[in-house]
Amino acid sequence: MTVIAFVNLGLWQLRRHEEKTDLRDTVAAAQALPPVPIEEAPAGSYRRVGATGSFDGSLQTKVLRSQGGVSGYHVLTPFLFDEGRAVLVDRGWIPLDAAIPAPYAGVTVIEGTLWPAEAGSSIPDDLDPAVRRIDPEIQAAFADYEFLGEYLLLTASRDESTEVPLLPDPAEVSLGPHLGYAAQWFLFAVVVLVGYPALLRRNLRR
Image: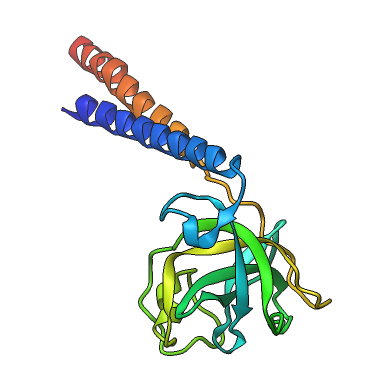
């Protein structure tokens, strides 16, 4: 039974690796397509989109993130692109000791990649000083307009300000350690198959 359990766990890790690989390929295929207006992007499409609208600096906050191996924050700012509709934008990275830069004031054009919201902790009591995850539901709890269920990783904007965060790293899917874990479970199964009989034979000789 132990060997069967180890083998099943190894197979499960292999399936998880295949799922991540399929998702990576899906994202890569979506990224290869030309950008579309954000209003036309299907939910969960991982598409590159463009949007015209304005940032709402009153509801911006930050989330702890590292970039290039350096700890800091990513700046999260709602972007109103339609009457009563907004998308939460990850505007990019700032150092730990930096103040949150104000967004561009006025109508502007942005481009980015739609990315799934991060699940996790409950809605905080306020947005200051930072949130624990990137999830439009958090900002929506403090806003009087609706948010898309995904957020946007900014790749370009017509922001004329000189005080802007460093753009976020490109969107990508991590394959994770599933292959390594699968190899470990299969190794455990081999150890039991080979080692346990050997131990029994040695005990019998005694």
